[in-house]
Length: 412
Ligand code: GLU
Image (cartoon, rainbow, N blue to C red; front, side, top):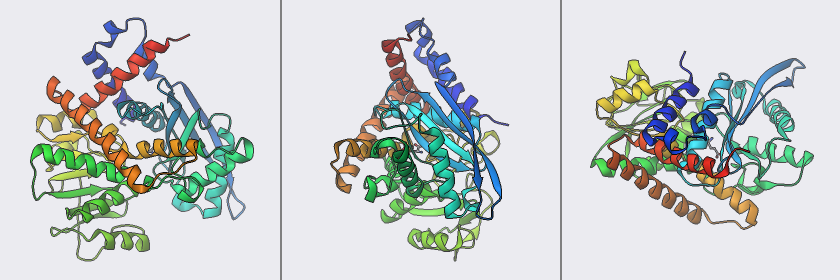
């Protein structure tokens, strides 16, 4: 079984060597301090179901590092959530916020639950219980949750509302809220649009023209990226989700596909499509993995036909697959850059909540694209200068900043 956290740490260790951190900061134990999260909160969330029965769910919040600011990261509801996964996701948040230069550390939370099996009232009770147990550990300047797989604006509204019962009225305690209660315009589409933006930068660098795109995962990130691509007239020939994979060489009408998924619960059976065994190995020029960790592995990496992969999901490529792709000349825009749009606009939401002054959607998008453009070009330049992949470059820039901050702050 692959450990997402071990995979992520393998890259951190490799990067630490490249940066020669042990001789630059001999006393600071940078890698060791990233291997052990600052705090792991693990608890049970018992829930009385509508039928009176009780279910108990394993629940987590991992506060990985706050060296650059308050802990920040989403809350995942998925039946396979476990401590290893939440630790990996929290570490990636530490690296992501450092890379894009926003004043946050990294955290992640989650509950091992299939949210589709609960009623809305059950879900609300579960979110409120989870929040009430974390009330002393979160706060607008301590740790700020947000949406992740299986959660969205509705759940964030419950977190905000539960927190204010126990502590202060603090809009900035959670981001990704509905706009009516202090959410930011542009937050819902931010991750998907960021993925597309990074893809366009890479496509431009590579000189690709008339290319086709395949998307794995059609949740918030995958569907928002698809809508943006479709509006730009870019052809999406393959889409996959938990219900199945579909293919149409002429490209999908994404607006119709989104409406179909709302009705049917997934992409399977969409008119004028043929079923497809694998999205990862399908015929396309650009692949956007927007679902889960560890989906591109040693065994399927050699079958990838895409020339470019842009990681909408966190950790979709294992280190072994990463080396294979690099050998084969497949360009990969790494997760901590490609999907950073979400946490960037979460930061803008937090700023707007603190100021009590709200921006237009155009303001939000302009700032988002400027920050992504700057970050992409920093990563690309460092990669070209040092003849390393975009992933190694992104890790080096993030880790370099974290190491400097750790050394500056000391340990006492
Ligand atoms: N869950 C998202 C991520 O993995 C967003 C986190 C946030 O907005 O804090 O980046």
